[in-house]
Length: 189
Image: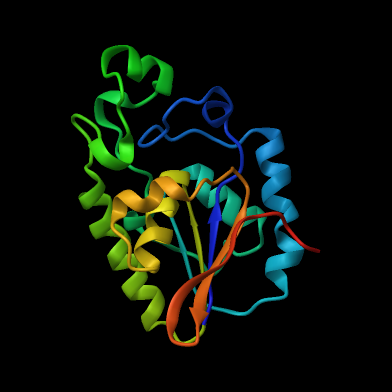
């Protein structure tokens, strides 16, 4: 069983470096192109379960990648709630909170790493209960936590899994041990 974890395509805020949690913004034209480029790769797979964040950037990526018809909205896949840091760049945040690190400190008025980890654990349980491969369409920080939790690390270990927009990751097993098969992967057609 494999879990295909797909980060949505590029948005205006991913380009500017702004934290985009609850702000529901669309993909850029390039983001749409990235999402469409996933279609031939994902079309070769059969998925027992497709889960998607309810945010339009993830839903649109899922649709353009060819899996929108079978996708189920999953609120546990929404991006980290950045609270007071929503829409701010890391530079802006560090002006008021030097040394801040989301994976350690969380966000004032938003979520802690442990809260995001609890949501991700529910997604992992649903994925592991599926009878076959699973596709997840979501966001950068939540998928980084998902990778950490998949391999049994604390949510804060998501800091070690960098993730670009419009990329495909595959989580699976080495024998019976949860493992990362592909991370931040380019598409192979």
